[in-house]
Image (cartoon, rainbow, N blue to C red; front, side, top):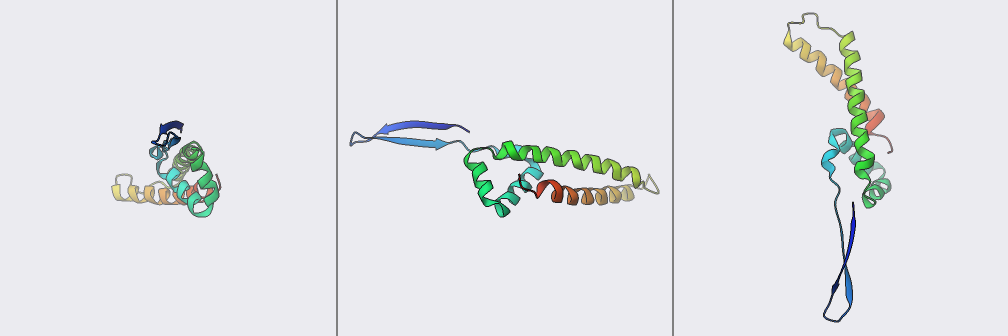
Length: 118
């Protein structure tokens, strides 16, 4: 984020500042970063406003998304090792096991990583 100060001379001879700020690119945050942003906005509004004001929202929340994805990958790996399908050729059974693992992993990640004070 950069702050640009330019002045415009009015008809009365006075210089008036033209103040503009660039908005942060929130597309880098990803799913869990955006969820953390919503959590901050709803539960810690002053912290959220401070991060927005100083242009640090992506700096603080981008690592949240990365940490969440790493934790989900690790948890899914462990879950799939301990929950093998009875019939590996059965696509639906394999899909169901993966979905159950993903739902459990996401629930834990949301509670432990996303919904905390950043």
